[in-house]
Length: 479
Image (cartoon, rainbow, N blue to C red; front, side, top):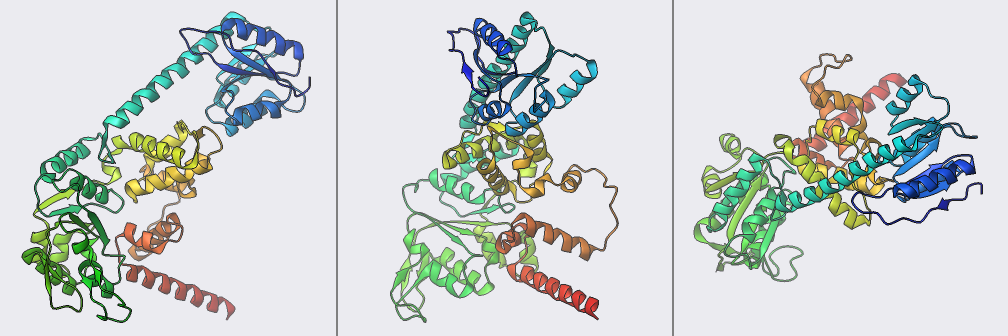
């Protein structure tokens, strides 16, 4: 029966959770003996003499518990333990040995073994171990059910949070939504400002009307006016037909101007006229058209500082900021991290047809230590990619993006001293930070400029200067 899996039928069981246990041993008699006892204990068993077959059972999720002999031809128990935990960090391996020593038992537990028992197997003790494990898995299942309920209770119009700062945001949204006034939403990039704007619209009296979004930073300045106010045929090159802008499209509803701080001063003047007079003019047309929209603006910039610097109109700032809602960054609400992880795992499982149950403890620790400069959006991307790549039911550190696995980054985020630290000029610190953010974004310059809170022009200038510097160094070496 080399390599063949022998399966015992699952007995009826009440009260506690029944386990699916894989027995790995090079002796068929030992396998049959253990399977018979497992059946009497109320657990389902399967046996094999082939370690590769046992690993396949683990990878496929058909078993979460393995009873493995320590001494087998081709592979010993310690080697199998390492490969099993690599295949599925959530697997429970119980090692069985005829040569017990305290040192080997401690080593096995350190490497991730759940228990270490001796031959001849004391089945009373084994039953106690398996019952404890069944109880642990049963409790975790109930905890997951409670977390699922908590997640449902903590969702507010698509926004997840139970921290005090987020509960204050939710309360402010409830109060503001019913009033048809302009709202300014502030907060760092990726914190969820657009979700807050959608919640305001969904809870408003005009929830059945249209909700239109314009990202002011993503539209070329020459086209932004046409995007917002529309244009008539022939107004400019390429205007082959008359089109309505977002304000007309969402008439009676809500318009969100995302990254409003990126707007030029001339465009700000035209927007101020719309707010004051409730009317727009299509590009190339003298006709004024009445519009009635709720205007929500969002920005990651400090508009007060922009006003003082002369880059943002003071009168427009006060018109937009009748009511202000600040969305906190993820670092300001660490209590929400487990809930957000669960929420994004649920989304990723549905998107990729996976059954990822959660994160290993070490992976969860890495996420807790990270500073999250990209906030909730960065966390969503991390969980999405990790879920896609994870080969087992649990996401481990090796499934996370490379920048989260680097010890140097972990040490910095944990506030620990780095023995290799050296004082650097501020310009060098700035350069290294920009390079790290670019690496984190996979070279996406638009995304990097959003996280760094600098204009794309400034980022392009930095990249151009860096390229020139690299070329200059190469030229020096050639000389």
